[in-house]
Amino acid sequence: MLFSELAAPFLAPDALHIPDGFLSAAVAVAMWIVTAAFIAVAVRRASREFDDRLAPLMGVLAAFIFAAQAFNFPVAGGTSGHFLGGALAAILLGPWAALLVMSAVIGLQALVFQDGGLLAMGANIFVMGIVTVWVGYFVYQALTRFNRFLAAFAAGWLSVLVAAVVTAFLLAFSGTASLNVVLTAMATIHAVIGLGEGLITAGAVALVAAALPGRFDQQVAARKTDRGTWVAGGVVLALLIGVTAVFFASPHPDGLERVAEDTGFLHTAQAPLFNIAPDYVVPGLSNESLAGVLAVVLGILLLFAVGYGIARALSRRSHRQAEGARPEPAGKGS
Amino acid sequence: MHIDLFDQYRHAHSPVHALDPRAKLTAALLFILAAALTPDGAWLAFAALGALWLAVALVSDVSLALLLRRGLVALPFALAAVTVLFTLPGWPLLVIPLPLSDGHLVISDNGAIRFLTIMLKSWLSVLMALLLTATTTFPDTLRSLRGIGVPRVIVGVLAFMYRYIFVLGDEVLRLLRAREARMAAGPPGLARRSGGSIVWRARVVGAMVGSLFVRSLDRSDRVYNAMISRGYSGELLWLDKPTLRAADVAWTGAFVLVLVLIELWARLL
Image (cartoon, rainbow over all chains, first blue to last red; front, side, top):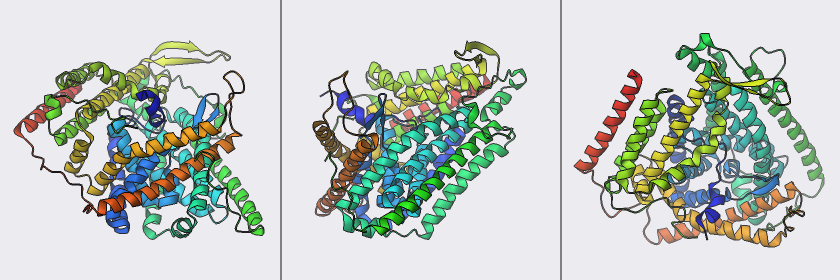
């Protein structure tokens, strides 16, 4: 068979693999430093837990995530839903092992397939291996006591959405895109793409819980979040808040304007500001970028609250029904 | 699926192939860093970087057409940068009236410079990464990663992963074929949609991912037991010890010197 025919499903670039050239050197190097620190901790912790089993286990599971990203399902109009896998890895393996697995996937994609850059790899691992993993892990842990599958769905969906928002910030920081536009576009697109991620994550968790009930209950359902994981989660949260704060506290909120000023063109500016979605901003705020961010954050919080409510309602109902209602066994496709 | 299906390595006997992988990896990373540091609109510096790449590519004996064609891989991402054309203040170059409204888009000169710069940086970086992959086998790449201080656990994970993506890729193709066989699609033009609702389809894919996970977990156990019975202790072993030759140091040094000169020149232009 032809290379393209066989390889095509495995080489589907998505908007989260940032190539080299789209991040400024400062942003790329800073993200490498943060990512390297996380990986160093993950290596220490995972080595302690898995010993010499680590490389074979994580290697095969990284190959699993890589291969699983080839699965797609038609959504509408020729587009298809894809799978990133960060949240699923975090749910099944715990955040530190998931970080190693996702780093290997992103590293190999960049080294062998040029899917994502080498200098930008630090940022790519941060977005797809740290942000998705910690968001997915904590959302799942917070909601799983209500309903396991809804928790997995929310973990998958939110992980992709937050990752997209972080990517938008990194691009805006680098002066590659205007925050206003890229944040709106990324958040909207990935709010939809993330639904696919959430559904696949929930389906996969359902199957694993049904196929390996003992292992699932021991290693996944009963997992306790230890102090290191909380601290790392706090660091991720602080970084996200810090990045946002720095962005708006700086006298030049838009990185692009600074570039313009540096090159001495600002006084000749015509300011043809173009707003792709005027209704998307919160009224009463002068700074449009800030208003856009607030709109996104408020939307996420609102959806989260609604989801939380549904989850509680569902869990009360399922408690009334028998606890042993097993999810549907092995998938139609296997 | 054959093991070298995805492999971008092109075998040849060239000085670039023979170069020490650690030196090659370092040089390629510095090239990409140099491209990232080049100021906006320094076209001559980008041309010089392109010429440097071309020189190495010609020496490497890898098909230029292949490299240039694969070099377009990052092109779709340009969409993310398109907005700078319109949002960066500057002299208006082109005004595009918007249909259905009385607004218009203005492409500014600064926006155009920035956009072209981003595209050039991205293209040069991808080309250099491709050249690195095309002239270095994957085991050599792993060894160079170990050589520049990447933890052995990470290198080990990458090695096992590379070995098994082809095996699990085959599993994926079998699962996809099974799905095709079970989900009858109507003829083109008629109802093309097969299967149930989007949620139903996503659940099927979820079950496929889940069963692939279960199989992968089983496989990792078997792989580990097989490795243990063969004396594996956690470190990947190579038969020969890599040595940095004088030629490696000289070529890499010259390459880096040219990079530094280009960057200095770009700032003095």
